Image (cartoon, rainbow, N blue to C red; front, top):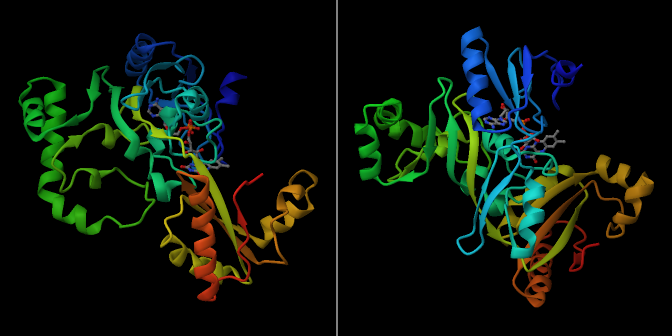
Length: 344
Ligand SMILES: Cc1cc2nc3c(=O)[nH]c(=O)nc-3n(C[C@H](O)[C@H](O)[C@H](O)COP(=O)(O)OP(=O)(O)OC[C@H]3O[C@@H](n4cnc5c(N)ncnc54)[C@H](O)[C@@H]3O)c2cc1C
């Protein structure tokens, strides 16, 4: 029965695990790795299992970190960081950070279920990625276990500190040396070939190293989908909660027009731009639960862009969307621009 439960995630794939383990701590993880080596079975880490591409299912020994390794280990509000176990859910951390006026900013739509291990391994981000970036931009340190059971700490290293690691004669030294040998000769190609887009999470984050002075191998683990190491612990950066928020809902008569409207809107520095097309709007207007949330819609738009602004004061929160609405109107972008300073 349990193997059946773990045979699916949010993707359409179905693969029965060889076995499932629910580690309580690092010692359990290392014991599971030992067993996997002994029986020649692959190991697959799993958090909330909300991945869409089958990353959390496989014919493997599945390690579910969400059951027990889900503790918040430490918070330092002054220095704005938290140390977490991989199974902690993102919204749960933010609930506990709220009294400090802080939050972990990357916001995948599944943030009520997504675990830190899954978010880091997927390099997750959400609607506010244009403002906050991706998980890799908020990752400070990682404690990881390699397939051979070696436990390593990764954090930012100056060139001198990296050189010192390379001189070590152990596995850690070998990894630092070989990674540098892989990157250095190809830095120009990496810089030239990596797509310059805001939200790109496929492949290893080699662009976090090419042309950079300080290296942090935690950023290589981020986005690696559990293929390089198991995440045992993470230290993540926290951001202050925005004091005020406001919205401008830009209405369009065509989907293409809405898509072309995004770049001009970005000039106004919003924290999020979310597209809702006519199918979603029609469903929302028909649904008894969501109908009352559609009060701001004017006419029959083919699409709307919901544009969010952060501000330090209530005045600024009112001014920024109003300024944008006026500018878009004068440039003929959209046909209605309601501003909401107290979004329900
Ligand atoms: C409706 C829906 C909306 C979504 N929206 C977004 C979105 O807005 N943005 C976004 O980025 N993603 C989105 N996703 C994808 C997914 O929800 C996120 O990427 C989420 O952060 C994954 O977290 P998880 O805990 O469920 O990870 P899982 O699915 O459990 O695992 C994800 C990957 O992480 C690895 N992993 C898990 N734990 C560890 C560990 N301890 N060590 C090493 N590797 C580990 C797994 O092996 C797997 O490769 C969405 C998914 C759904 C179903």
